[in-house]
Amino acid sequence: MMPRPLRLNDRTLEPRHYHLAAEKLLGGNPRQTLWMEYEDPTGRFFVGTWASEVGKWSIDYSEEEYFQVLEGRSVITDQGGRAVTVVAGESMVIPRGFRGTWEVVEPTRKTFVIYEPGPEDTR
Image (cartoon, rainbow, N blue to C red; front, side, top):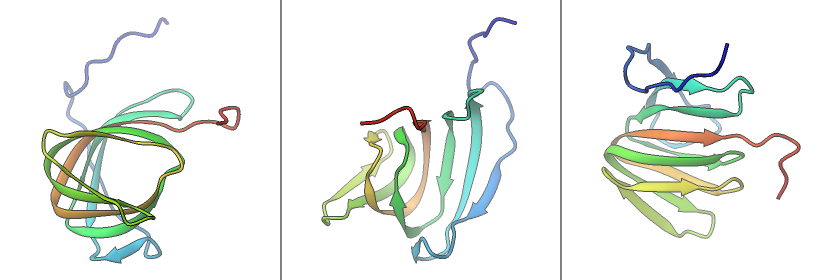
């Protein structure tokens, strides 16, 4: 069967609710929700929507991520202390190898596209 284009947001998806691992938490214990729209057969390319309650946690990106904030406000800070605030309507790319913190200041919802490189993908 030939692959076909997939229209996103045309289906009712079951959300997956979860909390972060305790070792990542730096403030609060935000409930997060994930609606996975698409995952390719390799398990390395993902598209979906994510939401989080207020809280702060450490991040360490092994993936490449593009996202657009749909609502809320979050602050992403690198290990050097440089912070970027993202709000509804803004888009951002977080490259593989980024380390720092993510703080949800106002409940945030975003759409995302993630590519998780395989062992053959080196920089």
